[in-house]
Image (cartoon, rainbow, N blue to C red; front, side):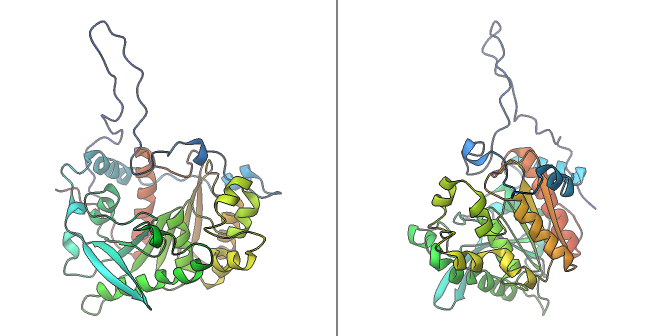
Length: 355
């Protein structure tokens, strides 16, 4: 049973008129504010058209993987939590646990938030991967998952921007070895949250860089995570670099490699290379206006999995770009995330909206 707030999903107060006096003309409504850390969410750098390979039809890909609306009541509930902005609903502001995780001679931390009901009993765990360094305090994203009954973990693996050196620790030839942190993080989380012999179900998710981490975790390190949801992720780095602009290809050379000089490296770090290892369900969501991804590559990835009988899905959202941080986008994406993980883990979809 979904306990939805009565707050309108239209998010009142985000759009308003400014009146400067009785004789003043009203100013045109401001666009809904962009949330999160990315000031350039609507920058031309990250809004364009997603890539397609020669011979593929963009229209056919959009028809094959159409936008699907999530549950309306769930979307409204998430919108109400978002609109609350942590005024009443502040589980995510509770003290966090910093879990130390060893991977050979490398040690990294995992910041963990635990909802009240999961302090003593086994609960599913979601590992959220991002380039940002985990910080304590209120944030709407963990708030969503905590209130749905998930333990929320943010591993600060190599490549995370906790320091300049740590951020570069997975660049170029270091990336293949750094990716083993994904497997180490899964071991740490399962061990930490096993209760009375019950090993928790473990999911992995992320956007962009975190989406790529998700797909690597589900392919190269298959079995480490029980289900994965990747947003704005690249599935085949060599193919992507061959399709993208020369400017972006040069910008990504230090991070991934050069498609001519480092072809073997790109193969080794691409999720598509390891697709035959997949064991658990995977969902992908891409924006049709995202110039940093390839719709053709994602289609090939999902079709390969489906041909093997795997639970795999791709949704292409026509109006979404690379950075989707407007309130309506947030509610849409996170409703799909909650529906996916609760269904795959066989747990009830309940969102607690009590303070």
